[in-house]
Image 1: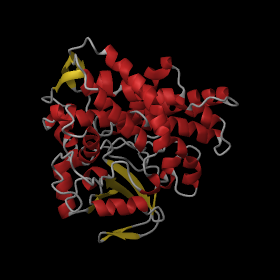
Image 2: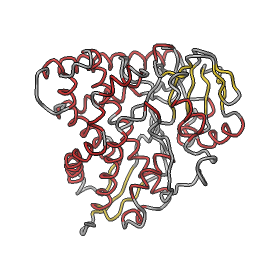
Image 3: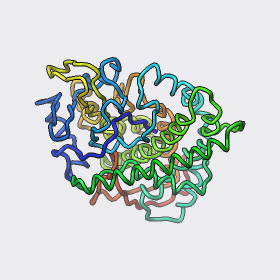
Image 4: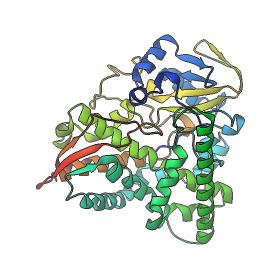
Amino acid sequence: MQSPDSVVGVGQPPEAIRSREGQLSPFEWYAEMRRESPVHLDEQRETWDVFRYEDVNHVLKDHDAFTANRSRNDETSSSTGEDAMPMRKTMITTDPPEHDRLRGFVDERFQPGAIRDYQPQVEEVLKDLLDNLKGEERFDFVDEFAIPFPVIVIAELLGIPAKRREQFKAWSDTLVARPEDGTQEEMKRVQRERQQAQQEMGRYFATLLEERRGGDGDDFVTLAANTEKLSRGEQVGFCMLLLLAGNITTTNLLTNAIWSVEEQGMMDEIRTREIDHKRAIEETLRYRSPIQSLKRIAIEDVELNGQQIQAGDVVTLWLGAANRDPEIFDEPEEFRPERHPNRHIAFGTGVHFCLGAHLARMEADVALKQLLERFERVETDLSNLRPLNALYGLESLPCEASRNANPVE
């Protein structure tokens, strides 16, 4: 699960990567910008683009000079689809000390020890999904595995009835969708649909929170409903954020892992454990980060890598470019699961480091391990890839697989 901190808006990607090919592989443009214009003003999108690791890392950590508070500039637009978080005050749209209050009440539940306690529940979800695939020779990895797996997991952690999962997935997709083109009509359509989805989700969670007030369950909705640290509006925002951040980016992490491993011809080495699958997941996070960019707003006039940024200016931080910076990573354009240490910032850094990072890693770890144990052959069709119209992933990933009669123990 990734929690993208961002500024609300409905926007297009930069012109240089607006094509299908550019969306699938923006990395050549990243390299060019790192070399020639590492802090660049895009006047069309009205944002400063930042590409180098050290600059991105600095801005993410400096919440005194750069704020995550979207209300400072709520007319700005996003380029990656990560800007559609619910229009409520949440931990990703506030700075300390308010951020610490909004995050602190639940932080312990996302630490490694607590996440290990969730693992049997996650493994059971995965077992059911793989059992349903056992007769399949062909399936779409995205639709039949990468989407339902994290949706079911986060729904169970929230305590959401199974019958609502498809509705929540639809809301999530709407909230991170990008316009098909740059026309005002299309942008307004997307904005209307987002607002409607936000309102419907808000009403649903407000009702559910009221029903669970005074309850003693251990699900996250009940936990939120009974904390005195959050107002009711903040409780609703927390639930909406957790649902959205808890499935979309994990779907893309799983898809991007299989995409990258198959592209490099490493599937068998991971199955036989010649390549550590946990390190392959970390390298996927660096090589194809599910969130390619985040936004901040300058609080004061500041100089960044020789450029004068004015108070109120929007800054787009390209995590995908930072994670391939040759000043930090050897051979950054190569997918190398043995890379260690791997200092990627796919989960951000500083106070806004992703709350769900440990959960996302555990889900991906369990999923990749059990998938390759269940199937002795998994081959994907990479011939006609289409980028997802949200975040960084694929619309579909067709697979052919055969079941392993003797799975690795």
